[in-house]
Length: 296
Image (cartoon, rainbow, N blue to C red; front, side):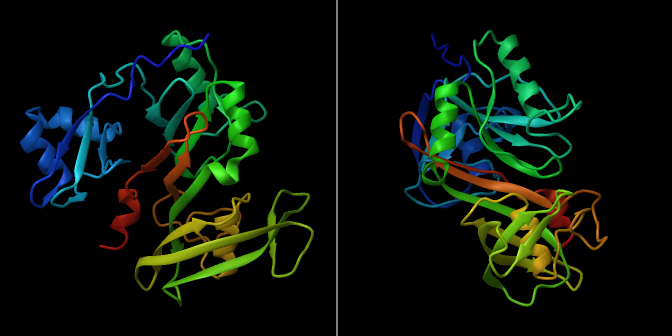
C-alpha cells in the first residue's frame, strides 16, 4: 500500500501578474504573509511561474505571467545541513545536495543522501526507502532525484535518457575561456586507479558530448554553464580539463586553483517527465553565491 506524502499534495493557489516585478517583491505585495514565511515558501520550491518551479528571489515577472503558490503546509520535519527537500510526492523526491555527502553508501562511510532520506521517511511513518537512480560526486552540489519504490526506480533507470530532458550544471573553471560557447565531444574511460581518461578517438570508453556557454569571466576564472547531451561519469570535469580550463577545486583533474575551498561544480537545472503521470517537472536552483562572488 502506498502512503501519500503529507507535506506536498500539489494544491496551489493561482494568480495572474499585472505589470512588471521581481518575484519576491510581488509575493510580498500580494500574499499578505510575513517576509520570512514568503522566503521559506520560495526556498522550499512552493512557487511556480508559468508552470515551472522558481526559487530565485529576483526572478523577473512580466505582465500576464501565471503564479502558483503551494497551499500545503511547509515541511518542518525535514532538517539536514547536507540536503534540502525540494519536491516530494508518493513516488519520488527531488533534493538539492550540499557538498561533502555521498549520493549513496560506499565502503564504511555512513554519511550519504540515501541514509538521510531513509531516516526522514522513518520519522514521517512513510513505508518506503530511497532508491538511487543517478549520482553526483561527493563534492558536487545540486539537484537529484530519488525514487521511493522499486517500480519507480526501474522506470527511471531503464528510460533515463528519454525521461530526463534537461540537465544543466554551472562551474567556475580556471583561467579565461577562449570561446564564449561551444561543444566538446570525446570518449571517456576509467583506468585501474578510477581516473577517467578522455580520448578524441574511440578508446573503448563511452562517447560523451558536453555543450558549454560562458556567463562571466576575469583574467583568472570563468563562470560556465554546461548542458549534458550524455550523462557520463566525471564528464564535465574531464571535458573541462580537456579544454585546458579545469573545474576549480578539482583534486583529480585540476591544476591546484581552488579559490573558495570546494569543487566549483553545481547541478542547477533538472527537468524530467514524471515516471508515473508523465507530467513535465522542471526544477532550478540559484547559482551558488560563492561562485558569483569571484566575478564581482
